[in-house]
Length: 115
Length: 115
Image (tube, rainbow over all chains, first blue to last red; front, side):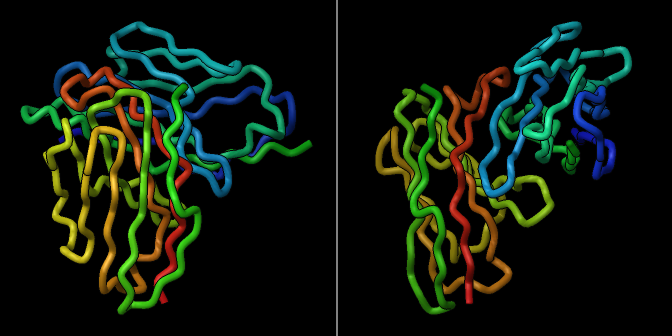
């Protein structure tokens, strides 16, 4: 079945450091890929998405490229801020035969940015 | 406007109580979802409504009873819950579940504690 694997956290960085959070997936067909962010005590917010191979999603300085050849959707940011501290979830849309619209989430990666 | 609202923000209930969670969106979305999220885990899908009809029940115990009175509202009725049901309950909506490229927009969640 479809699945998403994220690097385990927590990831601890100093402010202005470069961020990479790895995400790989297993899926049939051509799923859409998403990154969601969850700040402490809040719901999930869409950070960015990509719907087909080689698409690059970007938002608030974050980027991720849909790589079909490596089945990856790694999240990057050139210079993190303390306010980026949160849990990041990689997800794909389930395109199984029933086309449920179900999101398959990775386990989440906690990012801690220190001043 | 990509806002999904949920009430209440926090709820404490006993195992014999009956309570309801409410979710509302005014984006014209025709698919709505309930998720359950335990601490430090990704959200788990519970129910999907498509065009006000229940289309997916992920084998959720009958003590959880969803209802979609109209295209903007989604309720989750709770009865005879167990302490292990304590979690963050998230509502989400998307334009329609059949489109795998659609984005699910999440509400802030209701933090439920069962005593």
